[in-house]
Image 1 (cartoon, rainbow, N blue to C red):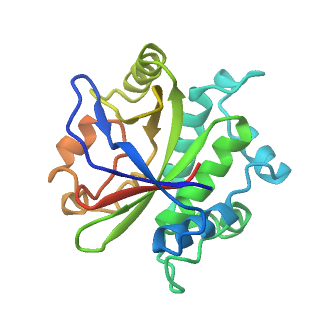
Image 2 (image 1 turned 90 degrees about the vertical axis):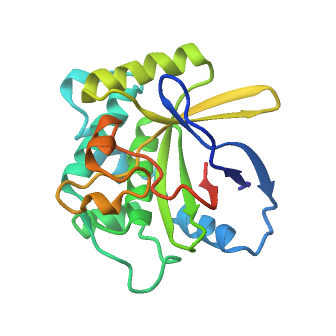
Length: 231
C-alpha cells in the first residue's frame, strides 16, 4: 500500500471539504502510520463470504438491487452506529480487530475496529473505502472511514444531496483529492454514537448543535497530520 499524508484545509462553500494535496510515504517506511496501516489492512475482510452475507442481510429492502449504491453504504453506517459500543483496546492501538472478530464481540471495540468493520461491510457490497488516521499536535489520534462518492463534482454533489435529504442535515463532510489532474471525492463515515459523548468530545466545533448540522461523521482532530492508512 502507499500511505498518503495531507494537511487540514479551509471550509468549502456548500459542503465542508476536508484534507487534500497528499504526499506519499514509501511502502517500506517504518513510521507509526505505516505500522498502523499494516494492522488495519490485516483486519479488512471485504472478500470474506461471511462478511458479505452479513452485510447483505442488513441492506434495507428498498435499497436492494444488483448494483451497489450509496444508499446501501448508508444502511451499513446506520446499522453499525446504532449498535456499536465503544471499548478501548488494552493491548494498544496497533492491535486492530478483524471484521469477523468484531461480529463475535457483538460490535464492541475502538474507533480502529469500527473503521475496519464498516469498511469491510461496505467493501463487501461493492463500495470503495479508505481509512484515515488523524494525529493531533498533542499526539492524540483518531481513525475513521470514508466511502468513495465520485470522480466528478456533479457525481459527488448528487451523492451529497442524497445524504442531506436522507439525514435531514444542512451539510456533509467530504474529502476532495486531486492527483495528476484526476479528482476523487470521499464521504466521511466517522462514528456518532448516541449518548456516549458530551459536546466537549467533538474537537471540530465546540457544540452539539454545530455537529448535528452536518452529516454525522467528520475528523475530530483539526491540527497535525491526516494519513490514508487503507485504500
